[in-house]
Each structure stands twice: as structure tokens, then as C-alpha cells.
Image (cartoon, rainbow, N blue to C red):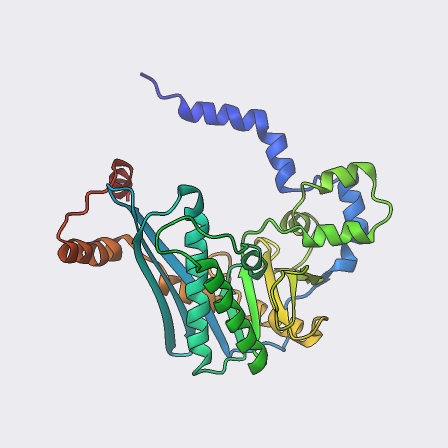
Length: 339
């Protein structure tokens, strides 16, 4: 039998090329491109960075591991590391539980973020960094909602999650520390929506097309040089935040992808000094597409669960203590073989 799967993939790309390309870049010469290019300069500042950076930076990231047992329950591990200078602060979660499959992804995401929040609280009890960088999105965390996770031993977790997040943000505000959340991928449309809101009228083609354009596509399509976009205020989260949350995007290299930045401002307006500090620090710490931030890359390498660590340490300890060999489901065994 001849395997034609690759040829079918080539045929698929040939058929869908224009559609896929149009979703990743705004075509030059289109009405949409003409509309956004006229106003883009009002919302984007070109820069290669400045001197208002700080090297007093703490960074936080997290990792998770999930394995399904033959009884349908899950082994769930999550850990968060926060680093500052030569010190590391950690938070760890472990559980063997049943959790609804539809809730598993939300749960693991929130568990990792919760570990980050708690490890940062531990750090701030002993350290006084000038800035904190967190891998991920603050606006995304505020939008999880407080719906209960369907699972055993998980009652009240969303409430505890937000208690820990608000504790962190209040500590940051009290210390006067700048905190920024950095996302490499994003579906944010805050900048696009702001431009459309400020523009009247919007051309018919542009209005319809803009509904499908995310901020990163806009910046990647129109930016001619590295720079950053105008911050946009995040709407009400329903939580008693110690200030306001602002979102902007930074493009440290014209050949790289934008990064979405969420930061906390102590008042209802953002402080231009905080913005300059974040922008200049991120430009100073940018080392290319693989190391987009020296501190976040370092903590990411430290916190990751690696296959050898999990199999030879955590899973062997499970077998030794529980006394039952690790009989995973067939899908999990195949995954281990592929690894």
C-alpha cells in the first residue's frame, strides 16, 4: 500500500493557500490594509529600546504533568518557579483524582498559574525586585471565571485561585513593584477593537474583515520597524483589583512575532514611566526568537517537567509507595513509546 498522506497534505495546502495566508497577514493593496495603514502610526511607536530598563528582575513560569491511570483517575503534577538573582522560590501541587475531561485543560492551566502566583508571593515576602515578569496573560487569568471544576478534591479551587492572584497583585501594588505578563501567542483584539472604535466611519470591507484580525496579525502586517503599540485598558474583571490592567504589544525584532504584554497600573490611568520601563527592559533582555527574554527563558528551562525526570523519579516513586506498577491506558503507553 502506498502512503499518500503527505501528498494529500500538499493538495490541501494548494487548495487552501490563499485562505490560510489571508488569516496570517493583511494583504497589501486591500481596502483593509489601506484603512489600517492610515491610522496605524497613531497607535504604534517605533523604538529599539531606551535607557529606562532595570536588571532587578524576577521571573516566574510553571509546568504540568498529567497521566491517566487504568481506573480513569489522573495523576496531576504542577509546579511553579519564581527566580530572582541567585534565589529560587517554588510551589508544588500533586493529586490523584477524577476530573471531568471537559474541565481538565482549564484545571491544569489554572493549577500552573496558581503555582506561579504562590511562588511569587513567597518571593516577595523575602525579596524586593524592581520588576516581575510572568509567562502568560493576566487578562486571560481574570477571565477564567469562578465556575467550579467537576472533580474530586477540587471543591472551591477557583475561589482559592483568585484569592492567591489578588494577594499577589496587592503585594505588588504595596511594594511599588512593576509586574508584567508576557505572552508570545495571543488571540487579543484589544488594539484592533480600539482602532475601529476610534474610527468613524469604517469602510465596509474593512469592518467585516477586521472581525477576524487579531492584534498580532495587524502589527506583523503593518509594522516597518521594531516598536510597541499604545496600551489599551482592560475592561472590568469583577474583582477588586488594586489598580487597572492595561494591554499592549511589543515587537522587539521585525523578523520575530509580537509579544502581548499585560501590566498593572496603580491608578485608573497607566503611568508612562512604567510603560517605558517595561518596554526598555524587554528590549534590553531580548536575545532572539529562541530566547525572547533572558529571565523567562531561564526559569522556563528550570521548571519544565522532562520525560526522564517524570519516569525515573516521580513515577517510580509512585510505584514504590503505592505498590502497583504503572499500568497506564493504551494511549498513554503509546505516548511514552513515542517519547
